[in-house]
Image 1 (tube, protein in one colour):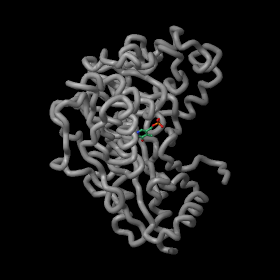
Image 2 (cartoon, rainbow, N blue to C red):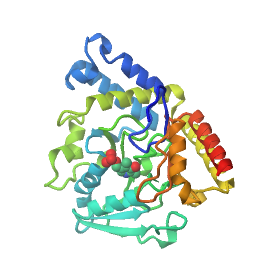
Image 3 (cartoon, rainbow, N blue to C red):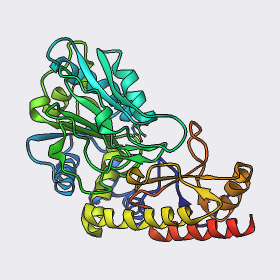
Image 4 (cartoon, rainbow, N blue to C red):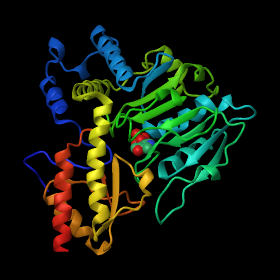
Length: 365
Ligand SMILES: *Cc1c(COP(=O)(O)O)cnc(C)c1O
């Protein structure tokens, strides 16, 4: 398939980026800030890059209302890298031996729990049931520890499309939130968490940079074996530049932060994401061909999963939608079906076009 225009890209990540930002980056590619070269070609320690870096951190702080007693780190290695970095940096805070609690609500939190088990006890507080209607295990079934360093949870399970409507109630133990697929999709109270982390490639920018937000009192507890680039304390003291940072991904993320600000901030993003996701869910719920398999109270606003009741039509659905420029709707192989990832950069027009296609496909089925 080849296109001579921009598609509506529903990929889960790397994902669609705002068209205006792509154009801006293109226009600055050969000559950034009059330096006669691109931002990718200058030193990360140059005055120009350091000034840009400070501005990006300030914009992120403002957009997400991150108080000054939280450090903002730009790291590499993605969310998967943090699955190891988090236990290495925090588990030693446990009362007795290294230990953390895990709310396992889907494939991503399951992966985090497995990785953490290499560094200490990774206690499962509750786990999701596979098949049927996906949901978050009821609060009264959770088995929280009294001696865990932190509780890890995934705010939005990207694969199944299960999103926590609010922060889980875990008492006074610090909460670690994987916000990889819903960062900046809705306003959140950062102070409810000790640590928040997200790879950029879903709702922010290109792959390559991972945002880690850490409350200052949680720094300084890394296990001695922690590699220096994974040590948050070390990174916080060195502006995340212990090694060469992914400068282009950081620059591009900064352009997206400006874009979000100009659109009206994170509150405006939430309004749009609610409009887009309810359009899809409302259509799916009244349809006789499609169904969503997530409990209503925890349906994701950024990753809308759905199934064709007649799975024999999957191939035709994917082929015809792709032909019309509605691309990457195939669900994750672990759960099958379809998934429309509708992050901040997905315009409403993409979702209305998708719903029109789904309606027409159903009419002909
Ligand atoms: C994509 C994703 C990750 C992993 O991110 P990588 O950058 O590929 O390591 C972790 N958690 C969630 C919720 C994700 O959606």
